Amino acid sequence: MSARDPTTEELPAWNNQPIDKLDRSSLLWTTIVGVHGRKKEFKKKPCIFCFKKYVGGPTNIEQHLDNMVYSKNIAACKPASKFIDRHTEAVAKLRIIRKQNDEATEAANERKRLKA
Ligand SMILES: [Zn+2]
Image (cartoon, rainbow, N blue to C red; front, side, top):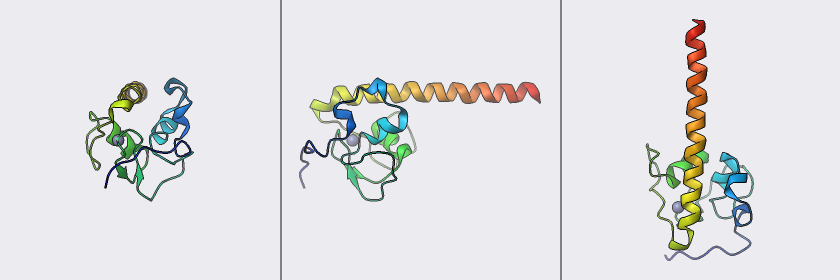
């Protein structure tokens, strides 16, 4: 089976939304062809960058997109050359969000530790 380019109508919001305006969830969902919004997907849907079809929520999507995220259930994304820039930008943004979340968790743990 050969991959085909998604049609314009299948392209989700990423086509016209800058990555820095998207939150984590929206950004992750915009990498799945034909998915609009945040509903859970049970059917296999193709990745917008490499057209690999898979099922999963935001955690799985992040694992697919970023080869630095471990515990892989899904093979890492190999973006088509024309999507490399967008893929790189998306992964960079996801890494920043993860770092911020980690720091927030750490700060919360530190507060708990000080109270104890
Ligand atoms: Zn992919």
